[in-house]
Length: 513
Image (tube, rainbow, N blue to C red):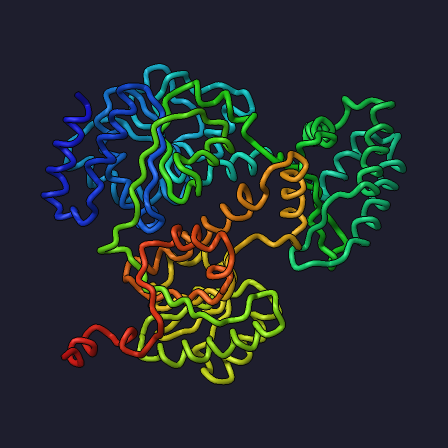
């Protein structure tokens, strides 16, 4: 059987290369091979740290290379480039496999029996745009599948830019005044929305009426003249399951209209019967058997296997002080700054950078000013150019972008949990959708997003079993706190922090009794 051959070859390769530091290589390789052989889809969940380090890639590559027929690997472009530079050449040379491995944006042809690397965008486009160029029944593996719903929503999002209004005018020379008047009215209406840190606003009833009036005006004339993008927009903009919002540039006096599905399960539901799919990723769900994730992407019951983080090699040291005020109180800011001073002072022996994740923009600025007054040029704000002992102040999004390209911090400080803010109009619109359908919007939307972002943010610290300071006391005083602690386990909780945790290895050995 293919499972036996995959196990034998990968085991020999790992032994030859001395790359057996992860205990799940062979088990995952057999699971992938078995799913392909039986044509049964499966979800394989690994830890966020293992995913970021790419430890799982050798496992699925062995199965892909030894499978005798065509297979598809769906992976983001960055992951593809890494595979083509590193794992694929080494494994292919050692196994002496002649199977073709190509990247493309289309199916190579009926003769193809190799490994086809596709980006998520290309793979989803084939089905969602009803191109159907990819043959039925080709075993497929998706790397990073925990982002599948986001990929699908991004692909299905329509955006109307300023230049698209010009194209609409060119298509209706007799309706120039109508289109321009609608655009001016919409600009005025959108700019009356209160400014917010997210630079966007939901399309409300008054805004929507302007769009609807323009639609009817062009419909009575000849809607078929509209450019393709506008025709798609006219088809979906009145849908109850669509989220309409505008991205506003107040300096330039312009805006971009966006329309995105609030849920993608119906659009994806028919995809899974076309081929067996192995979905690999981390932080899929807070529910057993990834039930919530499966609902989000329209997947029926299937094999689910989880490989949790290893306590021996991936446990963090968690500092979770008691007695701090909750983030929504007036006392929180002062106590937070006290804690930051304490943590930065006690961690000074470390040569590795320290990362402070603070999402609130005014608080970011205040902390940066206060810390710079004490620690000088060590303090940096959202930059990847760090020196020894730098103190990086960042929001969640920037940290996710740079965490794999900067030196691994010894101390990660999290001011507040990454629960999506209802002040973000897009989040508010999504919550309204769950409320409309009488669903638990916190459990189904806010909490899963927070846990996934939290697990991904902590993942680099696990490599060195470093220190994570979580200063949001909701973990201790809210009913969902236990789910958060379970999501970031394994950990050893610290009641206090001292400088010995941050001594360079050589110094620590000298001082050891």
